[in-house]
Image (cartoon, rainbow, N blue to C red; front, side, top):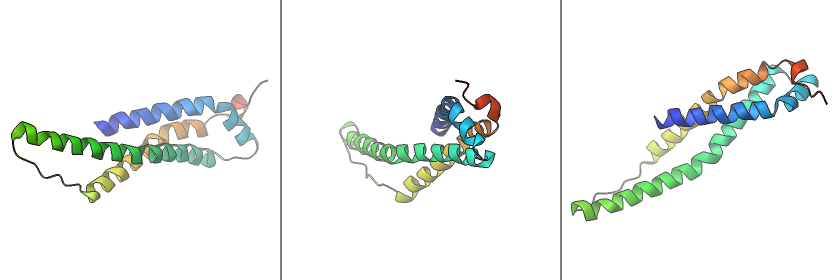
Length: 123
């Protein structure tokens, strides 16, 4: 469920980014950027956005789980061992990166399909 919400946020952000960059994409396409290069550019933006969010998210998530674990002892009367599984954390980070790139496919496809003539600035 969390991944679905995050992917919708990525799609929304990248779609707005493509709309704001329509003129720039038009100019780049006019000076020989291919549709594939436009798709790669938008997907790289999705990957960069995910990479910048994953490290702080993993750190904060680990901190919150440690605090929740510390709160269990006063409530239950006995401690519960806290174990951090690096494999699970790295697996979640990998899945989140894949989901971010997959969520960037639709905005990348739309950006690549922009007609050069209509995307160019008219000023």
